[in-house]
Image (cartoon, rainbow, N blue to C red; front, side):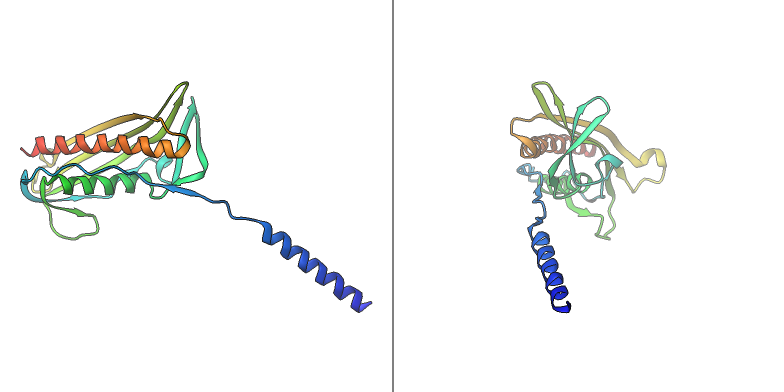
Length: 203
């Protein structure tokens, strides 16, 4: 009786192991933005340093989900695809890189660097999503950017400019890869405009 009971337990253990071994962790593809940085101007518009602070994001876009809008009040995400970096951090990092490459400032710093700077750029992501309309898929990127001059003592003079930017790019590729490609184009457009506005304000 004991021998038979032991055999039954052994069979149950082997069966459980086999069943558990067949379960596979779903493969998640991860995407980032990808586009070339702008060409440097060759001469600093101002011999000062700027810190690009970490951008915030509306609660809907704080995670890594690749979201799309299917209709009024309806939002969904690609089930097996994610952004490698959350949208707020990704926009921050690319804008910091592009400002550095553009050569507007003597140095472009991150929020982790403690050096004193005169200028500070902050921002918030309001849209980072695919919009699905019949025959018209597009990536939408909306961000509010604020440039501050920390040398000013009065609050009214502190803000050099504050603007809300909205860029769209048609999606030609399939699925999440198409969204990543189009969002890269939208980010490139945002970056070019922010750099142009910053240069204009400084001059």
